[in-house]
Length: 436
Ligand code: CMC
Image (tube, rainbow, N blue to C red; front, side, top):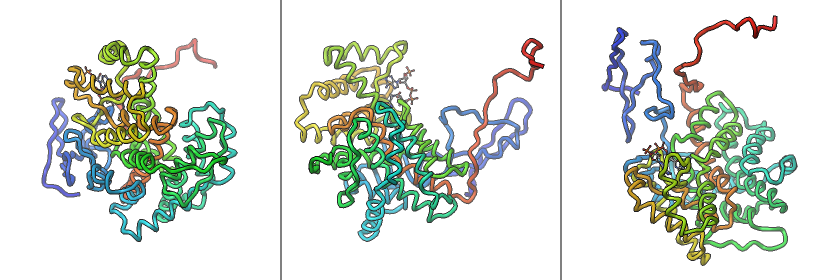
C-alpha cells in the first residue's frame, strides 16, 4: 500500500508528533495506519468494541451502514439473493467471481459428494444429553472434525485449505441435522446427494426413514435465501473471532468452532432465537393486547430487555437483508396458509408499532434480518433452538473465505490486542497470605 495522504497526531504531554499514512480502499472510509504509533510514542490506541478500528484489509464483503448497502465481492445482496443460489454464493465468496456453468457443476459436485460424516462421528453425539442446546453439539462436533481429517491440516498448503473448505461446507448441514435429530430422538438421516444443497438439508432435518420426503420448492427457496443472506457480513464478532483464532495457526475446524461459539451470543447470531422466545413470551402473556406494555418495557433502560430483532451496530437506516427476508417471510406464510396464525400476526403487529414509535424511529432502530428469519424458520418447522445453527451453517462459508484470505496474506501476524491496564500497581503479598 502506498499513499500521499498523511495524518499527524500531536500530544499535549511533550511526546513528539507522529505522522501516519492514510490509505483508501476501493470504497468506504479511509484508514490511518497506526502500526508504528507505539514504537514512536510509547502509546496504544483505545477502542473497545472496535468502534473506529479496521482490524484487517479484505476484498470479500462491503457494508455501507448508512446507505443500507451490502456487497458480496462487489455484487449487491439484492442481486445475489435473486439471481444466485447458495452454492453460487459460496463459490463467489471463496473465489472472488461467480462460477461459469462448468465451474458451478464442478464445485457443486465436490460439495455434494462430501456430505457424509465419518460414521464414528455419530457415536460422538451419544455423549451428549438429549436436551443439550444444539449449538453446544455443533461447537463440539465441528471442532472434532479436526480429529478426522489429519490429511488436510497443513494451513500453508492451498490445496489443504481448499479441501477443508469443501469438507466444512458439505458437512455442516449433515452435522446440524444430526444435532436436531439427536435432540428429538429420531434416527440420523443420511444425505442424498442427488438433491440440491438446501433440499438435502431440509430432507435430513425433516425426513424420516419411514416415509419419502417431498421437497417443496417455495420452502426450499426460502431457506436457500436465508443461507445467502447470512453467508458473510464483513468483520462481525464471529468472523473476527475466526480470524483471531486462525492468526495463531490453528486449524480451520478449530477456527470455525470458535466462530460458532461467538455466534451463539444473543447480541449476534442468537438474536433470531431470542426474538422468537420474546414473541412466545408476549403471546403467553396475552398476545396483541399486551404489545403496548411490552414496547414500554423495551424502551425502558431499567427493564433490561430490548426489542430483539431490532437495531444493528452497522445498519443505521435499514438492513438490506431484512427487506429481502421480509418478502420471503410473506411468501412462506402464504404458502403455508399461516398469515392468520396468532404468533405471526403478533410479529407483524409488533413490527408495525415499533416502526411508528418515536423511540425506535429517533434511534434509527429498524427490524434486522433476524426479526424475519426467525419467523420464517419457525414457519418452516425449525424449532427456535435450531435457529442459530442455521445461521452458523450459512456463515461457515464467510468464515472460511475470511480465514483463507487472512492465511494467504504475505505479512500475516498473530492477532494480539493490547490494553489499558487499570488494576493494582505492583505490590507484595501480605504476610498473612504467605504459606512459607
Ligand atoms: N431495543 C430497544 N432499544 C434498543 C435496541 C433494541 N433492540 N437496540 C438499541 N437500542 C437503544 C439503546 O439502548 C441505545 O439507546 P440510548 O441511545 O438511549 O442509550 C440506542 O438504541 C443505541 O443502541 P446501541 O446499544 O448503542 O447500539 P449498538 O450498535 O451498540 O447495538 C445491537 C446494536 C444489535 C447489539 C442492539 O441494537 C441490540 O441489542 N439489538 C437486539 C439484538 C439483535 O437483534 N441483534 C441482532 C443483530 S443483527 C445480526 C447480526 O448481524 O449479527
